[in-house]
Image (cartoon, rainbow, N blue to C red; front, side, top):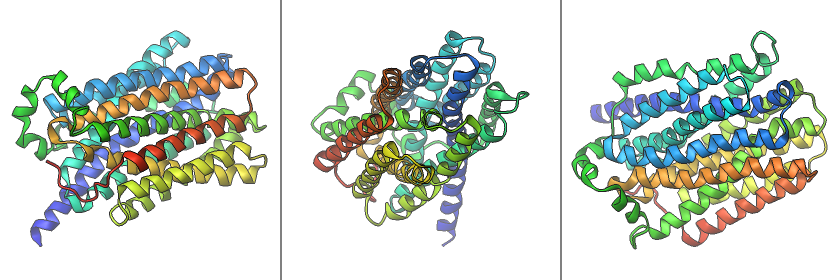
Length: 406
């Protein structure tokens, strides 16, 4: 009994520590969607230029997920987590002083590298550090900190960005706070015991062998499945959510009112995560992920064709509920596909492939909007992307509920 209580306290501490880092990441990504709307007004940027800001962020995330996934298998999960958090927060703070599109794009690349590296490393660390019976739920709860970060971003956007004394630059300075949090983590974040038990082997194994292992007979099926799912989900997420404020403004709402409506939609993310956390150990990863992706598909289509404020709010809230719930299930599902020596590399590679979708999604929206393509058609394309992800899980996915990680 005493041992189980100690284990619970340790799990809760790890969840809080890693989750707070996750929260800061989400706050930055959330603020970016609102900042795009502000930059359109302040700098007079075109939709294509705004699309590049979102896409260069994803280019950095792709590079960071790939490099730091390998780094985490070589040097440890804690080291990679700290380094990526520090990189992201310093670049975020510096971006407040960007003097034009070029300087902002460079800094967004480094922010993306930190973000892209941290997220798969954090989920791998937590997956390896908790008991199989609660692992899925804890990883989904880790993901739920993303919703808290988005809510904070929406609050900052609604109350602070419209103020002349703050604006988007002041909002970006707030994103430098994680640099101080990284110093706290240096002394309080435990590393993965699972990794430490076999780290001498992991460190000696060549990087090229780790990558080859992902496509070996033992792991090829799950690797292909993850790459398809990550690409499609990230493509649709960044294409839809980075453009939400701009889409609301296109539908006739001013900037402040659009930010307020999106804050209301964002609140629906939390019950999305919590319902997945409750279901994932009961129903399993595969079918929960499929169900929430199906909900995302339907909600995206309804949002695209909505023409009244009530329809926009309801379909937008459902989109937030289902899409972010699916992200929670995806993060729980991904590390469980691989053995410990290649787990972070595999999760990082899947996330890296996904970030290619994150590059193309915002660019596609910017291109289509510049060519007067309707919002309904754009969101229908995102629904089609989610359907491809569902088919990949149905045909290639296997259930990993409560399996022991080795």
